[in-house]
Image (cartoon, rainbow, N blue to C red; front, side, top):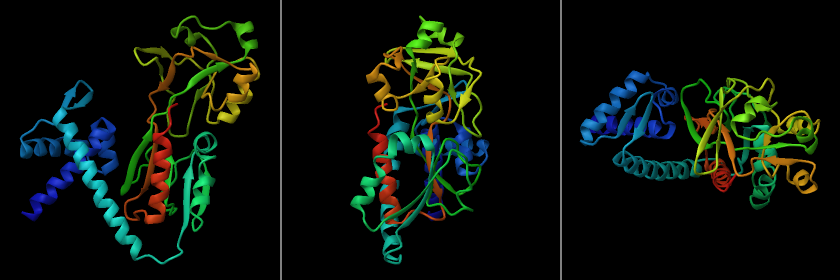
Amino acid sequence: MIRTKGNIFRDLQIFAAIAEFGNYSDAAFKLGIDPTSVRRRISALEEKLNHLLVIKEGRKIRITPEGTLLYQEFIRQERSFREMLNDFIATKQVTGNSSIDIIIPNGIIEYILAAQLPQYLQNNPDVTLNLTCDNLSVSVIAEKYDFVILRTIPRQNHLVVKKLYDPKFYLYCTPEYKRLYGLPETIEGLSSHMLIYRTYAGIRKQKYFYASNGIETITFVNNSRFGTSSSTTDKNIVMGNHAIVSGTDILYKTELEQGTIIKIFPEYYFYDESNGFYLIYDKNRPPNKVVQDLINFIIQVFEEQTI
């Protein structure tokens, strides 16, 4: 009986990973198991529960309504379990051990968390934060970081991975660019313009971009020949009057107010096929209460993002 329960719990973890990532391969990679084993375990779980949980549609999958209910309940129970475990661990740790080492990409710090973290530290005077701003993948386990935020999932087992959000962006240029090159009349017309795209180490160039106004989604080809990994660089590029850049209204607030930057297709937001941002930590070094409080704070900040 104990073994059966353990197997069911593991199968539920596998199912939750599939529901989170939307495919078998990423879930298998996160869990460090073979994709074939993932499919087999899900079939076994469906048989045990006598409910269809996952429907395969071509290369994609869809979670059934019953599967969605199961996922939501499992995540709630797992969160409660982790909170209990973290509280227990925290009671066994030495008082005053409140130094936190983390890595977060430059853009996330500059335009989402930079103004938030000092306030957090003001409200938590016993916490010391050692922050490295970097877009590169790291060895979370070997380098002993309490947690990292990355665009890609490191190829290491024994990691806990939580998707924070899928970035959305808008498009901007200068009035002089408009005079020199004109503006695209349609979304598809962006493919013939010098559009600066976002690039990161370990992430291939995205073949397509997508534009959405909340009602329809339009796909257009990424023909750009220039990619950068820095929003600061993009600001310098766009002021040169020869390119369209991606960003947010927060990033270009002053320029928009001064009229030195104009927004292209303001009714649309844009995104690509990249995997978004992930919060990651070593499964064998679960966050203590101090670290978990910071993680909860960062998750809340991301949940409040409307861009």
